[in-house]
Length: 474
Image 1 (cartoon, one colour):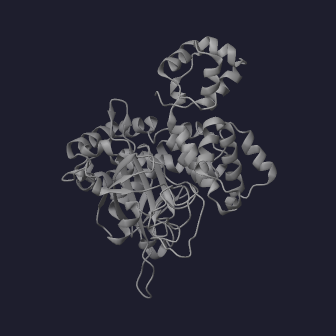
Image 2: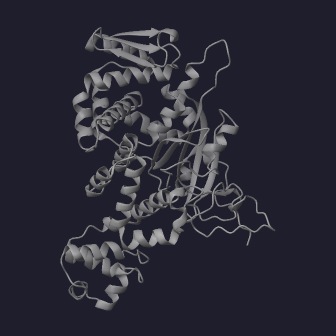
Image 3: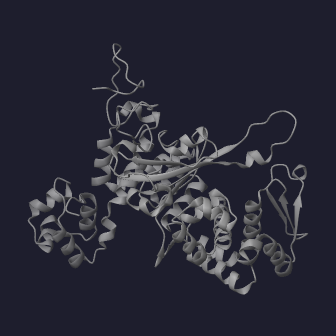
């Protein structure tokens, strides 16, 4: 706390209260010159000043936390890494200074860039800047941000899933059959496992007129159970889902629809892995994903997703981050409670083990990594089959779709995980230096660098060659 630099936020607070520097300095029992140094980020704020700030102005000190600034810095650096800005020679230090001193300007710049990426008109860009919380751009990004803000924990749907268990005679090992029976008795819905040829491009198809639910025969058993629970969510708990979605203030019908689907998915996971029972198993197995898969009859991805939702007060699990990528590096899912920053615009660092997993399909890989800010993480990663594989048929060879899931936590939580057993977590030789993305990473000696870093001026020496085109050895 002694090293916190809150100049921009403190200046904005003073301006909102219509105070001069002399007036606020008197309230905080410091000199106007010292306040000026704090506001210009030339001095950190001390604990005593923070406490007086909270006492005199009823200010929530959590609003001064560094996580928001770090995330804003990371996202703005990503945006400015677009080749569109190459001629401006923007440095990482410039971005940090803008975020630290003028955070509202930084957010406005990010909103304008996001509107530009959507192909918006000048009027739409203006509308984005006028919103207190500008949209993330794509509907999927809005939903991702909504889940991030709620720490991927939806107590309303947890309660609904638990109530259904209490009111029913479900069994953990007969859950699929029990859900089929529940759909028939409670909603008069018939379930059919349909031939793949009759469902090209579909995994699930529900006809509200005939009240028939069709599931593709190529779906693995855990996925069939998940789709059954997903349908029950929409048929029996739409009111609860709508109530949660309404708090998101989404900006389009597409975002609303995607959010409803995400909430139905959340309910399905909560039904397949009831919180109390799942939390107890997580603790007793020490987060052993392999054991949990078999105990609950679910997939690797379903377990990893569920682990990120364990945020119930008094029954909190390890705060994880989760990322899902394809072999081209595209990020299709991301969530972070661990504190790690995941790229929003483009691929993540190629040194993350979520990419290495493609070289050893089906094998769980572990990694101890360190970010440029010296924050360290323990991560596991493994490949999974994508929906494209379900459409594979005989005849001409077709591409086999694969994705990779990465699940990780801050390093100090690693000892709670079975996957860390046998590792000397204090050994610097097992640490892999990583970054958010090539453009935002300041590591200039990286042999995997694919693009020049914003952190320094690009200089090419025709007489020397580093490990990569953009690495510098001096």
